[in-house]
Image 1 (cartoon, rainbow, N blue to C red):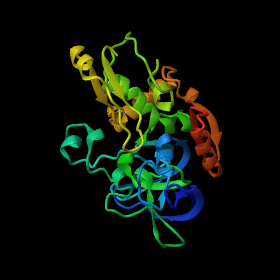
Image 2 (image 1 turned 180 degrees about the vertical axis):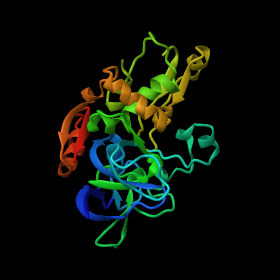
Image 3 (image 1 turned 30 degrees about the vertical axis):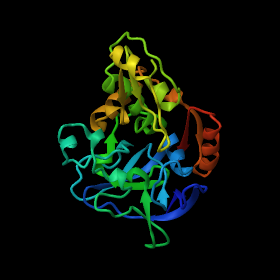
Image 4 (image 1 turned 135 degrees about the vertical axis):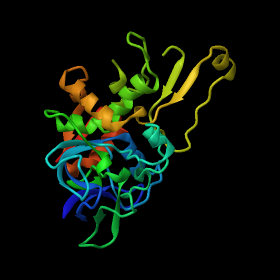
Length: 293
C-alpha cells in the first residue's frame, strides 16, 4: 500500500488515500517519488476547468529513484534518479518518428493509463481501478510508469529541481530556445511570471503562447497590424521537448549554475498539505510549491 493524492470528483478536495500499486510489467518501471511539483495544470483539473476522468491520482511534475524494472527494460536502471515526462511518446506515430513527440496524438498520457489501458493503482487490495494523471501520477509515494517516461539524470541533481525539469522548466526553457529559437542577446518580454515564465527569463514580432488556459478561454487581436507587421503567434506545447535529450541537458545546466532551478522553489510541503497548496496557488502566492516525500 502507498499513500497518494486522489481526486475522486472534479471540483471536490483532493484527498490522501492508501492504494495498491501493481508491479512493473514489460516496458514499465516503479519509481519511488522524492519530489512532486504542484503545477497550475493540477489546479485546472482539481477545480473543474479541465475535464479529466476520475478517480485519478494527481501530479504530473515529479522525480524519484527507480526501484524496480519490468521485463525488457534496459533504461532506466534500478537506483537511478529520474525525472518523469508527462508526455510519453507512443513511439510509432508520424510525429514520434520525426522526433516531434510533443505532437504525439496517441500518447498514454492523454488516457491517464499505462500503454495497454491498465491502471497502476487500485483501491483496497485489488479493487476498483484508479487512473494516473498523465500516466505518471507524481503525487504519490511511488508510481508505476512506462519506461519511456522515466528519464535518467546526472548525479547530484536536487530532487526538487529534477521534478521541475519534468514540466515547468522544460516548458519555459524550451519555449525560448526551441519553439521560438530566440537568438542569444535578444530582448524578450515575459508576461505571467509563474514557474514556466521564470524558467524562460534570463521577440522580434513573435508571441509565443505557453501557459495552458481553462478550456474554452478565448483571445482576440486586430488583424490589420498583425498582417501588416508580419507578426507571428506560436503555440508551444511542452517547450517542443524531447525529454530523453532535453532533461539531462537542463539538469547539467543546473549543476553548472547556468540554470538556477532551485530558485523557483519557494515552498516545500508534505503530501498532506496539497489542498492548502492549491489554495495558495489560487491566491497567487509562491512560484513553485514542491511536495517532498
